[in-house]
Image (cartoon, rainbow, N blue to C red; front, side, top):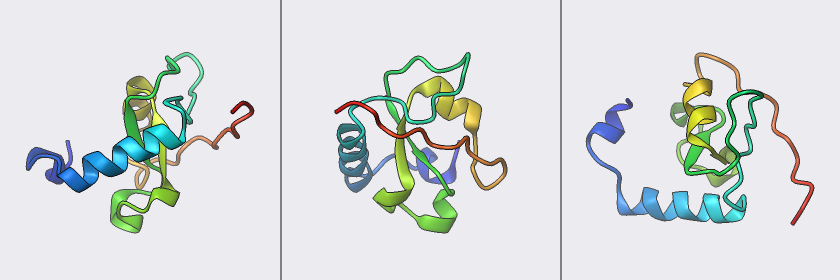
Length: 87
């Protein structure tokens, strides 16, 4: 658990999270085979929060299992993103 989460989420983060989920159509963008459930409920920092902060360009919607399986991107690389094929 990150230190910021233990202090509680902020209104700004909840708003940004909702925008990213909406932008990505509530569909998981990580799509790890054998793990993904498809419906995104989390937002994943692709380069790590320490590197990019909460820049929406580096945030993607993710399902809970994929987000937890991927872990901290500064310690393990993310899987390559999959382009959106349907709108």
